[in-house]
Amino acid sequence: MILLKSIPKVDKFISQEVFKGMAIPLITTISKKVLQNLRENILNKEIDEINEVELIKKVKNEYERITKPSLQKVINATGVIVHTNLGRSLINENAFNKAKDVATSYNNLEYDLQKGKRGERYAHISKIICQTLGCEDVLIVNNNASAVFLILNTFAKNKEAVVSRGELVEIGGSFRVPDVMSNSGAILKEIGTTNKTHLRDYENAINENTAMLMKVHKSNYSIEGFTSEVDFEEIVDVAKQNNVIDYYDMGSGHLIDLPYGLDESEPSVSNIMKYNPSLLSFSGDKLLGSVQAGIIVGKKELISKLKKNQLLRMLRVDKITLALLEENIKSILLGKIDDIPTLKMLFTSTKELEENANILKVEIDNICKCEIIHTKTVIGGGTTPNRKIPTVALALKIKDYKPNKIEKLLRANNIVGRIEDEKYLLDFRTIQINDIKKIENCIKELVNGSSNE
Image (cartoon, rainbow, N blue to C red):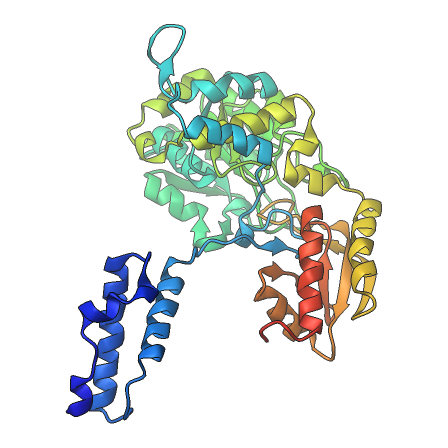
């Protein structure tokens, strides 16, 4: 009982100089919890003395844990350019600064400066995208899943949408096309088989309740062997002949020709637009290399109907997204590919990657064993499924640590690499030149034993 009476009073405890400058409400909440735990430990006879220094330390540690940003910068050394778990595409710093200038001041988001009256937020992006793609109109929503849902809900609610069985995809987070269709109110009409779908399957499926013929990008798998699928150009023709909508969910659509022969299986949005489709949708933060968004392009009449759907209010994007996306598309239109980090990484030659890897190797070769190797990686983010591109990595060995140990130690320092063939690799396809020095310093700390293991 004597020990219980020695427990500090909350108001006196939090008034100490050590807590000066901290948020009093939060310090109070944490202190109450710490002191309550102290009381319980005394009653349970788990402690026989009160150490106020330790109590203060617990409160401060918890305060720092709560207030430390959960979302942090990491160094992507995996080689996966569009890494979904690591934030997908990087934003160009100059584009970000322009968007920041817009976001930190009043702007004409929904105001027509020429007419002096209310305007439309999508007008800011439609001009540059229509010029780039030659489409009639464009609509931006918060991601491509939203685009799929909005299109189906607007045009196929209580009607049939025809889709090949080989394209009923499930992507990360259990996002399934059949479930999205069901929730949108559309009726799924499956055609063909898992491995083979023919043009006649689309033709035979059309009836008085058919709203659209839909093609879906196989974002994380490919079907090989005894297979066939229908080109979207043919689907567009059949849809026009039968007065129904053709729609291509392109997933990770890109606007330029890709290197390493990737266009053979991954046609660009620009190429698909040659077929004069009704509607296309694709992601902004994948191979387009911009911010998270769902981009819908197509016929003005259809885009207009999408804009009138009340669901759009819940799916629309803000001024920052529009500003960033506009800068990105402008870079593509002007041919400034190096202004888009995702594309710059994709197009970097293996010679340059090897030169970058050698910068780090020279600095750490005398303290740990490392070897430059030529290997392969994937682009990631549901793009170019099962296709790999060449890359250069530094195989790293620190002391007698196994690869898993090295991976854990570097990850604790926000450096995320990968293990391949029982080697820990730092893949320079995704390592930014400004991060090489940070990796060097971290490795030197680990080798010298000054890092927390």
